[in-house]
Amino acid sequence: MKRLLLILLALLGAWAWYEREALGDFPDVLSAYSAKEYCSCRYVMGFDAAYCQGYVQQYLPLSWLEDEPPRRRVSAEGLGRRNTAVWLGTREGCRLLPQGSGG
Image (tube, rainbow, N blue to C red):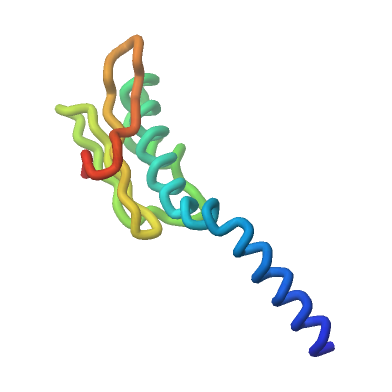
């Protein structure tokens, strides 16, 4: 039984090492998705804030979500990462800002 557990741990470690880049990028996904989708829900589709908050709700909770209606800008933070999306116009919709530009 111990041998099987050690083999499984070794396989898990090898997989994590192989996928280290993707695993390192994962924390950005939650906040980036939430900011972009909330922005699109509010400013492209025109839904109210309460609906859009439910729309972007994930299994992993956000620690922070800020909607700035006058600027049509949304910032979200989750898993220690913050991302910001801004509405560019009717033809362009919402776009994520480069890291370090927002929030």
